Amino acid sequence: MTTTIMTDTNTHTEVNIISSDTEIDIEKGSGTLESTAIESSLDSSDTNDKYDDNNEESTPAKKSCCTDTFEKMKSTADWWSLWIGLASFLLAMILVFTVPYEKGSVRAANVVPSPMRWQSNPLDAFDVYSFVGSLLLIGFFCILYIIALRCMGKLEQNPAKEYIKGFIITGLLALISLWLGRNQFCATNGLSYAIFAIVLGMFIANTPLGSWGALSCLKLTSKDGEFFIKCSLALLATEFSVLARVGLPALVVAWVGSPIALILGYFFGKKVFKMETDIALLTAVGATWCGASAISASGSVIEASSSDITLSISVVAFFTVIFTFAQAYLAIGVGMPESVSGAWIGASVDQTGKSAVIRPFM
Image (cartoon, rainbow, N blue to C red; front, side, top):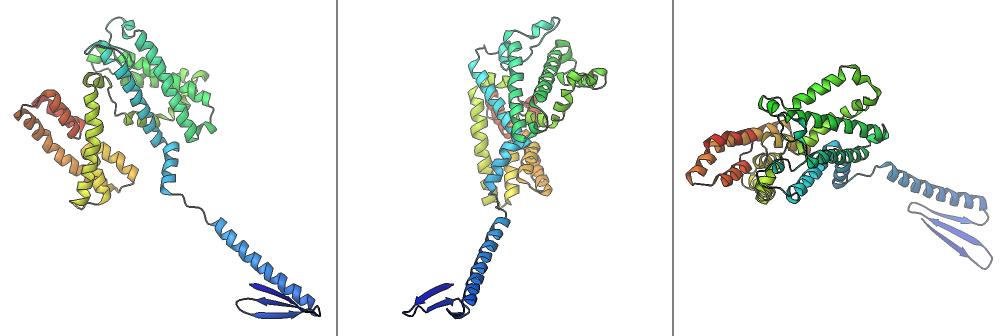
């Protein structure tokens, strides 16, 4: 809308309101009509502006894919289990390559602080390093646990001190179970630490001890049992003492060879076999790492269909059966050293059980 005001020598004012539809000439004599027309035009313009503003405000801003992913990375239990697993692995690396020990010694097998094997004297399970280190590990994981709860918003429902008490008591019970399971007789006869942990849990839950006020925090912490399992699965129940024996070459095989195999497998499936994206990625993941378990975990992350997950597991399992025998006899045929063949087969045969089956052949 354009408004033109012209004034002549007789103070006669003419207002031309020019719009896209009409042209209205208003002379001074009809002042009421003039003001009404102008106000009506201005009100209409304001209304249109407000309508546009309301439309902009009513339309929710769409989050980008990256923003949504970063939000999940800091606020979901699935991602925090990975962060805690990564922090645990880095701590283990620091201990493996900084704590002095002799190859084949007791310290090499317990470079990550934990109770040692013992026979008749329970105190033989601990020295200063293992006892103090075990307590420090409980404190380390407790800090990570509280940080994870804070980011996931759980501390708004219950105070942090209750979670801290519950986690420390749970950690001490786990330490006691591990200590009992390291007894020579128990270890020989299949009485592992897991059995003692279950027995202790049943005892506390089904006796008056469970209703004791000081242990009420255990009920709060036990609700995060699934989260603790996810954290342990992120570490794949790794025995870090293996790294103390094989050292840096094992990290090269795992951290260099595996990513290369994953990338090449994915692009080979996409470009050569023209596979669908989800199936190519899942098959490459299963062939690179732990077979069915890796495919299942990755499938939930990329939201793959159950049919794609099942197909990928079937393909990987089929070829794993073949290579279980083929790689073993190939290594024997070319005279490959045991350490080299073990690293080669362990890095390429995609299920732990089948890797163990190869051992008698070697």
